[in-house]
Image (cartoon, rainbow, N blue to C red; front, side, top):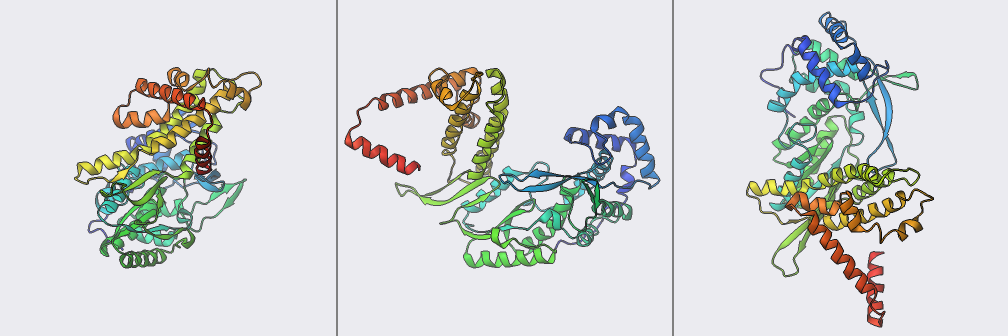
Length: 470
């Protein structure tokens, strides 16, 4: 476990007791957006009487009369899943106080406490940093991996053990008491008040810091044991050069997680030999080492997971309902942000590769095949739009009949962002006119091939191609 700070944080509470600190926190809360808590006060309502609200909050904080309020419990769908996960929405006032405390605590945690391989909820780090660490380990021979999943991490953090961890770094009793009250504030659902016996409310401003501080114990125990790892919130990977070493690493991780009062979800946890096995992490599939056809060396593939691509299509589908009526410009404005957002996320693997190259790490990771996936997404998007853009009795059949008029070139020139082009444009400056010319040539070639007679050999090839696709 991590050691106590030699010089703990004192007078944290006193540092938030100024109007300027609370106004700064308010501005951050406002920028983050979101709805109101159980008191029904929204950001707009709070801002309408901002000066009076901030002054009243400041006076109660100074008199130590501030009391946290229960969070409002809502449910949102899990990513790439039909299951729902709970989200706790604190009141605007509670968010402001939590943000003010965060502004004092975070620099100290960032500078002296958190491990460099912990990348979630930290400024300047994130998914790209995670991918850099993974790629670096794979390239340097750490190809035995322990892919671990903690069961219900955010909901199951033991409150007393969390507070014990925080006392290693914070010596301000008032601040610790306030954090305890936030943890115990409970939640309101269907007008019924419920207590919370464990966990940090997902949705609370300070929750990510508390969660990171808790699993920081695992980080430094792994460091002491000489184990390479990368962690993003409660998702983490361990790396080793041999099967024996990774099994030892897994045993240590499981022990520490158990000591923290948490449980490993064994059904979602696995050992991976990257010489023959693939694994998924943060929406990317890492395809195992392969031998080049000319036997000049090895390479591996990284691309979006099937779940990520399915989510991409679903988002496009949700925005292209044929029951709606818009101009073609409005339709493009609905789907273009989704395309850019998804492709920008896929581009972080390219950025990770380039960042590692700057540190002297030669890459054997191939990502060009991502373009093929995006080509399929583009075709799906155009298919959806051809139907949606028909205002009178739209149907799949009518959409198909519009394929020649609303062809690939039409969409590219009219303002729809092709994901395939955007991907290569952001990497290498791929010009849109070059892209259009290529899709025209591809279409002409496809049309020419379609007019060829169906010889016996061609039928055999077409049958084989159809079998491969299905």
